[in-house]
Length: 317
Image (cartoon, rainbow, N blue to C red; front, side):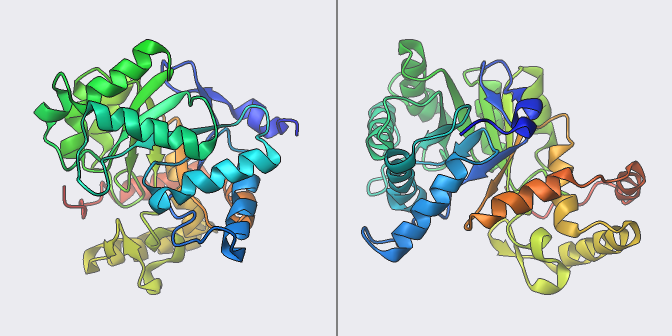
């Protein structure tokens, strides 16, 4: 399948990595959860994975731990059945041992091997350290720590670039400042209603790191609106956040802009972000996201958003 012209025109470099990304990256955190091999649910998931691998996004994002390994397994099934379109790639993440919590050099190497086996590929170009919350920073950076494993993989050519992928700014910031990583992936902390990660993104930019910004909807709240009872960053939205969303909805209504479109484009338009990661659960969401990406949002809308001031942080790090 040829690369769509809109993808070619929108490719941009991912920091200093030499990897090219499109404005949108498709996420698979929910893919395959609880899915049994041979079931209709598995076939539906493979159909979704195939649509991702042949869609307009340059990158599909997964992890060793997503769906208990099923996300990678299903992507592997789709790869074997239908291949992958030119210009697309899968990136994944190494995770702590799900049973013991161990997250050292050896675990990083095993995690990567597990991912390659599930995907049925020889390598990936980008490999993230994922959610290193069970270990302290000194342990992670030690001679037998998780970071040593990633550095070893990069030095050997097993991967081209390594990233840090996590949410908590207080944790992630130390990894960014270590100057060991090529890429940052953050989530839920740089959105229409949350700017806690701004300083993190700026630090990454100063180092010429590539930047993925995930979860631009913060969960469901910015996708469904203030009356939905939606969550933000995996928790019920507090009253002050719901009120902020109501203010945004009034601005959206006055400019004829859908809230979800505004939330997506907030990330897409930021010079601090190379690619915005959105998890999807249905193939039709790919076209929906592309349509939202194409909406022309007037500068006056963003001026009105800026006039609200920086929102107070509601995410506890």
